[in-house]
Length: 428
Image 1 (tube, rainbow, N blue to C red):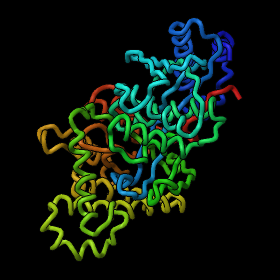
Image 2 (cartoon, helix red, strand yellow):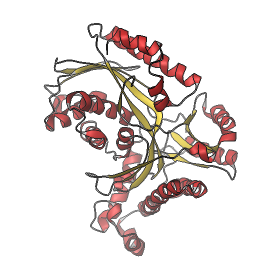
Image 3 (tube, rainbow, N blue to C red):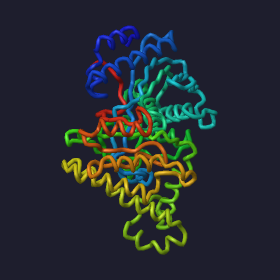
Image 4 (cartoon, rainbow, N blue to C red):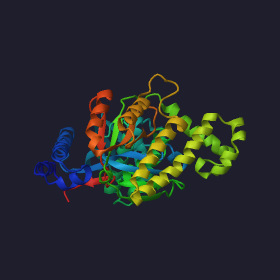
């Protein structure tokens, strides 16, 4: 698309249909997204004045609905893409480099002739190098591109800004240089590879999978090479509830050891049974072996393993409840998940910083506000960041105001499920 024509098309509301699908309807939503895209295209034009033809891509953030810390143990999760996303304005070329400027961050360049792990690329540039490497290993010839990126998926908010960015880059490369041959599931695996190997974060596959596939999905990671992905639809508001995410503004900095400890402790339990991950351990045998486990593993590791077994089953039950239309049972399962994360998984706050308990505070205040209605739980990795609440429609404005009063303006956001994952944005 020509830049001038694209700006005119956005001004003339020719993108209204796709905006409605991705972000929801409403005058405020349309006005905001229209201006957001106009600003993104205009920013690209200023950064790369020699580029006249562009394409636009989008990749969503995600919300984990069920399966807290189950994916890295080859477990099951229930999650959804949401209407917060990263968008990228792109011009393709054959310069042999990828140039990226993300709003609020310094620009960087990745030279495609040197994208090994030892290339010296760090941070986001390392992730881009990892994604490009994986595609090139698949035989894809990448010429390069210039990209301006802006994101509503707040970094550190628990909605997975990194997965949205990884999906965005993967979708851009797959669409233009690979004729969409990789597809959503493979793009997710490529993003995880980049994050694990190049960025050095030993994450599971859930975030990338949901961002790439889109919609409401149940995923079984028993075989991570071929995960079972089942998509289905559910409008929470049809049952009288809204999904709200509250960012407690607590920092994720210096929490790597806390996240790593959960995975290591669970896998130490699995090793006792000669397995690599808890998914492959017999649950009844685990409970029978607790006396012996205490000789080599910590009590916390045993308790966290208990969370895995219960939470893994809960994710399955939650998906079934939504498919069956049994929303009250679904809410009870969400409450159970919240209590298990708090008492068994123990990821509401860091033991190294026990005085800062924003997650616990937000959960306590939400339970007090909701009473016997709705449900609340920690959201994502935990220790800091966000909580998730299912709030009755009639109470949602008051709930948002209360959370904003405690944690600051715009801390609480009402979200909708986005039906698609990584996509190219066109007028059609």
